[in-house]
Image (cartoon, rainbow, N blue to C red):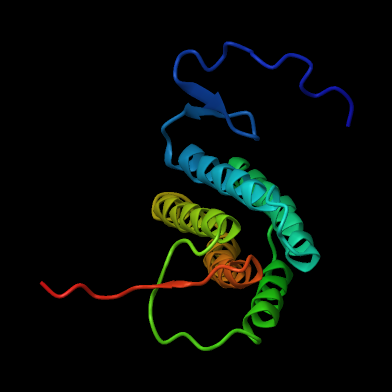
Length: 183
């Protein structure tokens, strides 16, 4: 790959624009930049989950693969017409989701984000992925976005919810159940 980033600053964005992967320049506040920027933020949040010492190896492998796929998804959103996320990626998320969810007790109540430090970090990642999904949908209403991108984000947020449940139990914490406050 060589030295692609030999100089980190270019000053080309000082006017509020940025370059897409295809060379076109757009505003830094464009829907496309917002979508892939939020995907990047989600990837960073998953990095925080992975930085927790208590994360089991199976979850670590799964989320590391997800980080690579999120980098691909960001590239797909950054380069109009690029195809980097596929149905097989979504199928793999569903297999992981089923595998992590099967041993868990069924949900009867809503769960508040928390339970343990790693579970709380995973809930933050989940909510950022949900925002990435909303941002990508907003982009898709203005420009073409492959449906795999939206489906991937939707499934990933479900997976992160289940992983947060697993982490809460593994860390010796408990899921915090929502209790409706009667006023």
